[in-house]
Image 1 (cartoon, rainbow, N blue to C red):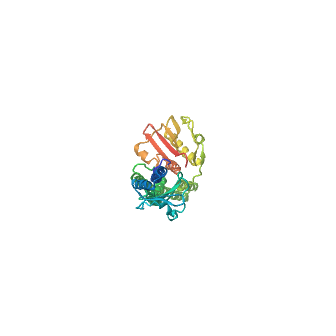
Image 2 (cartoon, rainbow, N blue to C red):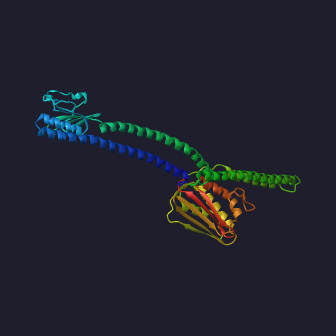
Length: 428
């Protein structure tokens, strides 16, 4: 059924997997944002230092005074190493030089030891904890070594974090597939067995309730098999006894031989009906017009004048998919059963409506009704209140409904009538 427990579990498992993926992606996004924040913090810090350096270079002409300010600036920003040079690589200041050197500009620095390429104007290049910024006005290179450089530290953490998330997702993916596969194999097996036995899957207490229902059905089938064997043995014993008796009478010329043929044909008919009931039924699924199905079934039965049929059919009925001939046979059986249950004048009501992808066909009569004991056996093969009946009619109806993944329900009270309700899914 579409609203089965198995389908609901599938939805929950899918939502759970997508939730894990969403949390992993959200974690990755937050990590990227944090990395960008740390990276921007380091870069903003270097740009601020560059602005102050540019101010000192343009404001203070005395190199000793500028070096003093640069040194204080280096200490204030907790810079591990700070170098200022012109665009040709001539040093203007080096924080690691203890003495003030008036000829400091004559010393060159090779930035290629730290960086593969140099930045353009107002651009920055990073190599681990080392940064170089090209100030535009006035033009100079600002080399800074941060200890620690948060962007570099967090960059390494971020790489491991991405590796961890990727590895976790792969592991969770394989684990999820393994668990879901091993979870659904027994559940699918139980669902298939339940469907074959006509057991409705329970949403609550799936294992206990469903297994209890399956056990009851299997026990019932075992009882039916015993009853079936007893019925066959009884009928065949009676027929054989009748044939032997007739053979003796024919031998004595007290009965015609045609009576033996008649009894054999009775046995043949019994065997044919038993085979029809017991053999597997193959569905020929096609779109079924429900209104036409009901009209054809009503037209097919022989309706006495004392009984009238009322139809209550919903205005909007969608087309269902099923085996038209089998459903037609099931409805005819139910209508015949209702006609036989009405001894005097009566009414049969056919009520059809569609709700949540389930078609409900209720056939109600105001006949003799059934008591509690009869209700328990009403769908059992070979149970019949008619002397000439084999009791296969309602059992065959139940079989047809169940192979359509539907179910049949019965409500009845002795002396007040009976209602058989067929509930069929829209799609087989």
